[in-house]
Length: 291
Image (cartoon, rainbow, N blue to C red; front, side):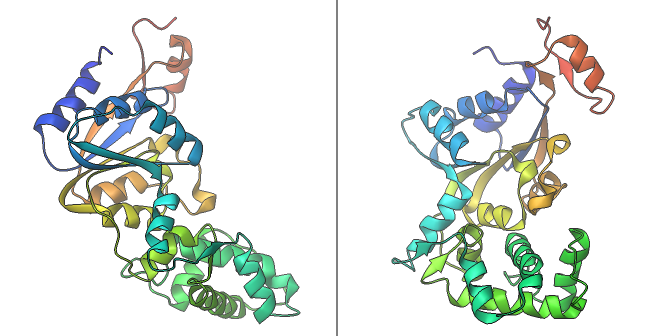
């Protein structure tokens, strides 16, 4: 590939720079191609955190073979589950884990089931009870209810829902050695402080859509003195309803004192579309050879 000046600056930072970096890439900036080429310039143990399984498989197929480098490509959920199985070898995955636990503990409270399950899922994604992330307090739970505008059934008081959610989270944590759900794959190794494999490089793709626990796991996977690269676009942060933070790039950048580098050229769209998009993303530009 012939890199753009911005891509070349990023590659130069990898080979001759130090520390960590947040790459702010506009829509169509070729961030995946940029990251794959960046892998060929890295040495040591490298973890590439893909957003979902399909992207992980694509990156695996395109990742280079580099002497002196060991590249691990997976989602953060898959990585977390590997860490958890080191201490819970017979654990099983059950997507309805919390639903079954709820019905065991709160028989007859079917009207509160939906909101309590949603609240517990969001609490796991935000790291309630995990170290210094979010304290397991009534205020923390109330903040989640308010932030996500969860609807409390009229038959229940606000405090009752919080108390039920706290009990359900506790029951879920107690059951972790035997069964986990999707949220637990990241939450369980964090809340139980399981030792994780550390890497010289940690790459976080689609970093604008990370939640607190995904970022916490990424930081735990980084060796002391290691380098982190988070790539994303705040203007494409669309998963807030699932627990992601709209300021994820700033949060992860602040955590590692990262520099910021841009990828502002969109290779995907014609010039007319890019010009129109500048109404909302003023720094996006079209490729010179775009139609």
